[in-house]
Length: 371
Image 1: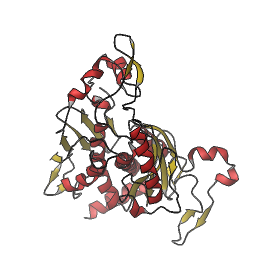
Image 2 (image 1 turned 135 degrees about the vertical axis):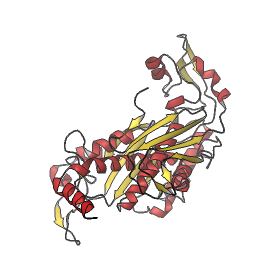
Image 3 (image 1 turned 120 degrees about the vertical axis):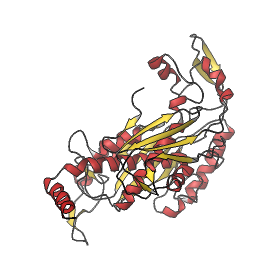
Image 4 (image 1 turned 45 degrees about the horizontal axis):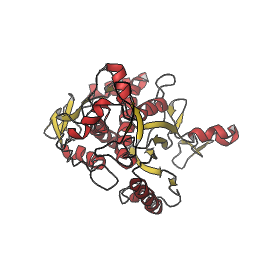
């Protein structure tokens, strides 16, 4: 199976299935000397862990990570970092019925069309549990970004038709809300909306916004390695994401150049800055030093108990009701996944860009020679 490796210089390779023995990741290209322990990884995994609120699947998993390699005496060694999370609450019998048909909205049909075989227990590699490896790898990337003074965080801006009011949003409210919405009034309304969805055996989609502070200008490549393209590809690779936009995104198509262009000026620090940020911190595929802003649109959870029409593997049209333990909404737990994929894309592009200028290469190696 191709497609389980992400990155060029800083890479992750995720592995495992939803109902197998475990899931995990191998991180390669990480520099030596970075302080890292299991608690650093666990804090991110806890934010995507199931069973925490009534708006998440009731599957009870501790999602406790174990670091198997690449760390010695509390610091990275520069060798591959391997991490595992064992599955402890599989109920594969809940999925035995779906072996005979294709669930609407899932990868059952396409997986079978590609491989002629599929692990029907919870979706196998197409399950949301695959994102554990992404989040664990992203936690390592976050440690690197912190040392560079770069901050990445995400939050939910909408669930169904309920949208946050940006004038009411506070960063500290993100973890106070069970839905990770920084506007607590909107969070309460979204909770009522989800309660109604659950009562009607339905689910909801939503939007996650991710911001990056402290990104230096000039990161990204001007042609095929564009920073916005890398971010879009990274976030779009998350299973339930159906759309990604940077800055004003699709709204920019409704404006004029005089409205959309971000004027430059000399800021208080004496550096060149933009007055506005319609571009979302990226121009010509390279960071411009402004806050990077991206949004990801998530589809509703496809596993719903309401009756749906589908086709069996034998070609018979049938009606089904999907059983099992499922999230009525994905976005609150996916916040950590969006942060992880954003961090992974940023670190990879930062590392790729280290060879862009000979003066900086000479400066680095001349300094090393002096030491």
